[in-house]
Image: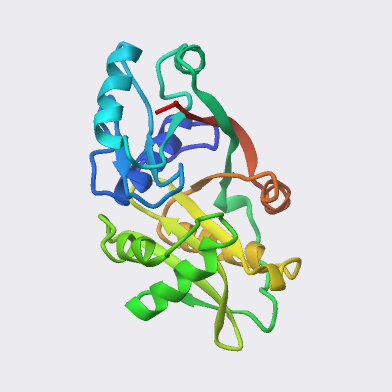
Length: 250
């Protein structure tokens, strides 16, 4: 297994492509990786990068795969230079700006979780249904959650760990850890609104870091929301780059 620092960006981008393509079983390493779940959220149907392709050609191909879904277009350091500007010139709107943050897990001390919080795995179908219900609202995923559950149950990779934080038997926090590459990547970090400011997201994230360290990996990456950024900085994460998310007019 390769050893990286938090400033090695390409493995972080590769881990992100692999995770999102896992939702649809598509190839993350092509010059135009796309994934479609038909869940009405722009993070769940998208283009992940364009590389060494004329942008108009890439847009035409992307529309073939994604038209009819609520889809977005990620632009990060793995996309051709000028992609963001080209999308804007073609009528796209920027809908998100996400810091890419990373931490070296060997520098993070273990801290006890809240005493009433039990952290375990969500594995069984009934657990995954509750897990999806726990993160869908906080993450802004609308409508029927059945399709999201189906996608989770049929995820393309088995190296995804879903950490569920329970209080009195109820899932009140979630954190998904992907260990499909030489670094860890975390997603779906969410807390029930009634249980916020109790350290639940911090505890779940720290547990993901511990599992990453136990696996022999050194780096964990994530994309932060404006609300999550301060939490991750307190843990030790640093901003190393950014993703911007765009939507083209249909």
